[in-house]
Length: 476
Image 1 (cartoon, one colour):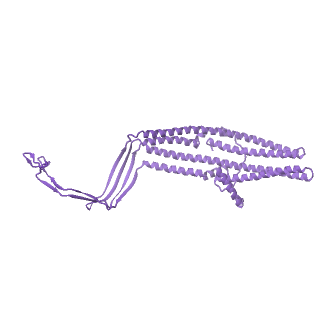
Image 2 (image 1 turned 180 degrees about the vertical axis):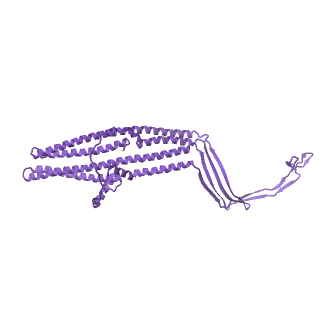
Image 3 (image 1 turned 90 degrees about the vertical axis):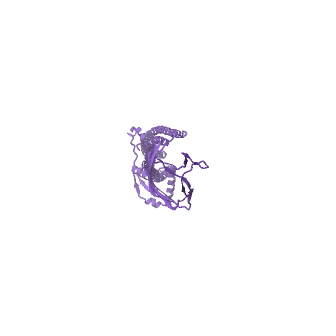
């Protein structure tokens, strides 16, 4: 409301600066339903809620993608001036000869079946083979590898299923948030709309009162000029005329401000002029016989229900981290490079397949405590659900009582207006024949205007109370 008031004052300044534009603007005829539709379409909170719904939809799609294999490409290239290598020291190697069975046995010199040993106690071979020193120089420069990798989760402890359900719930909550925002926008629009209609009726009432006292002023002025009435009586009437003119001026300003507030609510330029065709009427015959159990269809109640379900899915998501997980991966790649002694060692494509299994064994109670914490959050959500149910039922009862009071007030105000009007007519008749003082006649006119104003206010409050009651039972 503070924002609305600021915009009203800013726009009031604009109207003072550009009165010609305001006067030339054509009036736009709008019904209540049209205003509500325009408000929902242009309201910034609704636009934000719609963007949040888009985000929830994209989040759901991204989580759903976890069901499918992931394919990724990779590549690596090495360019360096560093080399490394080693040398295998050569020497004399023992030999072997075949035995009777076709196997190989050490070619050892024996003496009567006993191996001949050298001075170090090692067996002496009949012959030796000589191996020279072998050097290895490895150059990794200009080595590269490229390939594709496919990864497929097989069993993740229910994590993917839980995450997908949570994404679905989040999307449903975003949809409910749009309904909640729309309901609030429509209620605010109804309040602004009926306030505008109310102040227009107030302006008409003030003008009617001004016409009445102005006519009386003319008659008293003529009578005073003929010497039939005192100057004091004329002054009393003129005071009431001045008051009526002030009322008309205040009511006119109220119409301008209410018009601008309604324009702000429905997204029109604040200098736009709106016309409405609604008249004062009360349809209370069946209002208080509606099904009030529909409060459970209100988005506020459904949102807390979804929150309970969301907390339940979060427990499954936490548990999944401490259950066995199985996944598979397939890799296909090509490697080229890695020279040894100026000869390329690798120049080929290859593939590999792998299955991984992860089984948590012991985590010092981490998983247990996390699950307990989520269960506590679920309990909190359930308590909020119960509290919301009670508050919504209380809201229905309070709005029902307000509507009953508004209906009764309208009926009483209508009766009071009729009585005040009859009183004014009788006072006028008595004044005509000189049996009523000017003060009493003015008082009768003032009472009629007051009763009419109270009837208009009661009617406006009734329409707002009806809108709040409909919202509380989910029928706005």
